[in-house]
Amino acid sequence: MAKILIVDDEVNVRRLYGEELRQEGYETVAAATIAEALEAVETENPDLIVLDIKLEDESGIDCLIEIVERRKDLPVVINSAYSVYKDNFQTWAADAYIVKSMDLMPLKTKIKELLGKRHPRGV
Image (cartoon, rainbow, N blue to C red; front, side, top):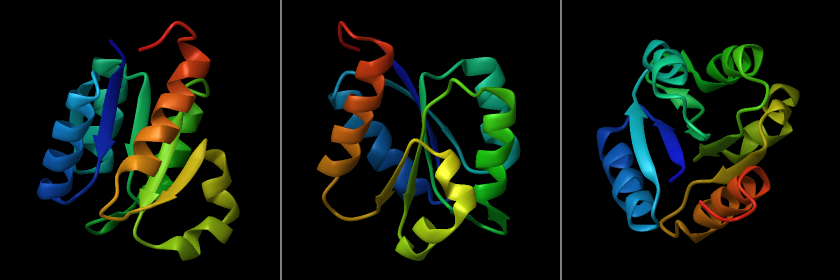
C-alpha cells in the first residue's frame, strides 16, 4: 500500500484528503507546517506528497525545495487554490500542479498516475 503525505495548513482539508485517499486504498499521513512535513519525509517514508502552496505564514515552495534537495525521487503534487503559481519556475520542481476544487478526481487521477510509474503493478 502506497503512503501519501498530505501537507496543508487547513485541518479540514487534511481530514478530507486523508479520508478520500484512504478510500482509494492509500495509507495517509498529514502535516500542517514545513517542519512537520520534513520530519514526516524522514520518519514516515512516504511514496508521494500532496503539497499546498500557502501554509499559514510559510511557503509551500520553500517546502518543495527542501523536499527535492532531500529526496529527488519522491513525487510531489502541488495542490493549491492559486493557479498563478503555475508560472513560478520554482514550482516546476514538482511532478504535477493541480488547482484545488471540490472535485478531487483530477488529484486522485494524478496520484494514481505518478504512483503507477513507481509501482507498475499497482498501489
